[in-house]
Structure formats: structure tokens, C-alpha cells
Image 1: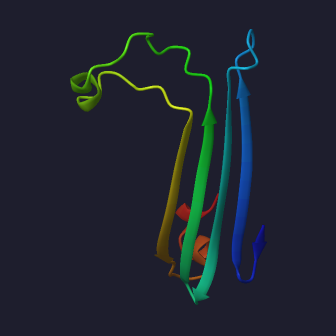
Image 2: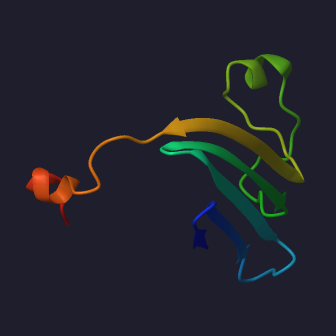
Image 3: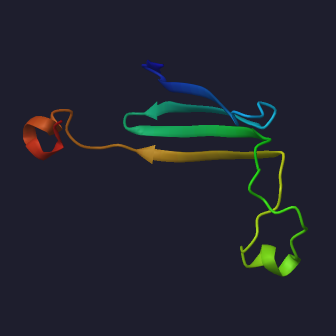
Length: 104
């Protein structure tokens, strides 16, 4: 959704392993960009995933050395991250006319 005050977005994605639907992966994402001043925006967002489809991981336990050097991945049931940032956009509103390489 795009408004005068900024933009707002959200999505949900569901994946499933066909022979066994209990092995699935659900991801939810949301972000917002607030226009603070002309060209200055505050960006916020987050993602959360429920993970139940790690079928390619070996059954035996990984040693701490294998995990530290990124040779083996540990099983998990969820992942998440949060981000924030500030962006500044500048230039002419007629940029495609001034420079035709920008147009599409």
C-alpha cells in the first residue's frame, strides 16, 4: 500500500513437502517506510519463519567445530529478523526525461 505518509507491505508464504504435508515452511514478512521529510524516510521491517522442512540435515549431531566453520547446519524450528534504516532520495522528479537510461 502506497500513501502520502509512506508505504506499507506484508506477505505470507507457505511451502509444503508433497509426500508429507506436515513438513512445511511458513514465512510472514512485514515492512513500513515512513516519509519523515522531503526525501527522508524511516524504514522498519520484520520477518518470522516457522521451519518444519529440514529433511536434508543428517541425523547425527554436529560437532561444535563443524558448526563454527559453517560445515554443518543445526536443526531449527523458527527463524526471525528485524531491520530498520534511514534512507534519503534525491534528484529530479523528471529523471527519466533528463536521463533516458533510467526509463523502462
